[in-house]
Image (tube, rainbow, N blue to C red; front, side, top):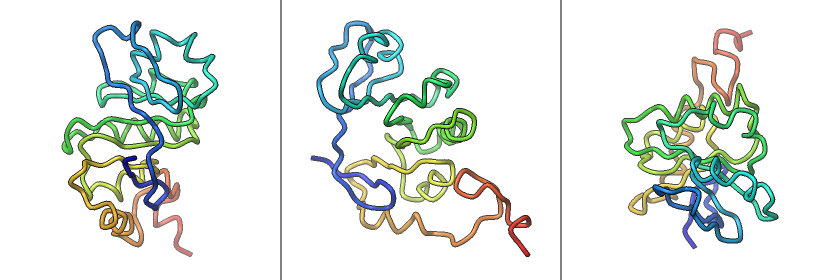
Length: 166
């Protein structure tokens, strides 16, 4: 079973990711904890909502948090796929899911993410990271503590530094 970083620890990944397809209405979703693409969720909402197993959904970087809106709270996990480390749209999507839509579950970054981004991804609300196989996850966990304080407000610290000073 593959491993990932969740809540600053190394854990087994028990979720199965369903690949995107041209015909989302025909995708067979396996039993167990599954993360489906947004298009599959939208095409099969009625049958997927009736499942007893945990369900997650994943968004590509070009799919907006507004696509889920208040439905976001019904998922155990939402993953955001980063097609390249230079594509920062997923950072904004994460903040919107946490701050505007009140998502409290596992928020996973997946795809092409690099160690240097983990601290900033966590500030935007990600608490889970599925990284490429060539990344040393034990070393990557350390990067979540790269900085001791931040000036700006974010999901993990809603007050900017000047408001926190006595």
